[in-house]
Amino acid sequence: MDTHPSTVMQTPFEHDMAERLVAALQLEVAAEAIDPEAPLFGDGLGLDSIDALEVALMVGRDFGIMLRSDDPDNKRIFSSLRALSAYVQAGQEAG
Image (tube, rainbow, N blue to C red; front, side, top):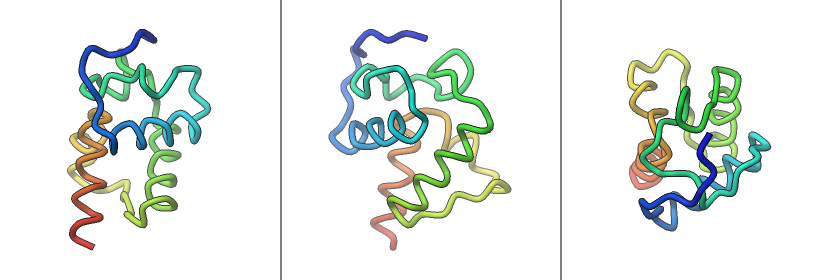
């Protein structure tokens, strides 16, 4: 896992989301070191299916947006910090 600060800048909301991910998943990486365009799973941040459940719980608790395991868009929603943040922001604006 790359723990050097990303050359791609996080938006303020992405940074907030990164801090929440680090706290919820007890990651050993600084929030600002998470590349917002890198994959959350596999070779990127290295998350797994259990982490996905924790992320879904955190998003529901912190933002009131329910992520369902059977949502066909989950692969896109969880593809990166940027995608997850955009989905949560859109949900907040719609709600």
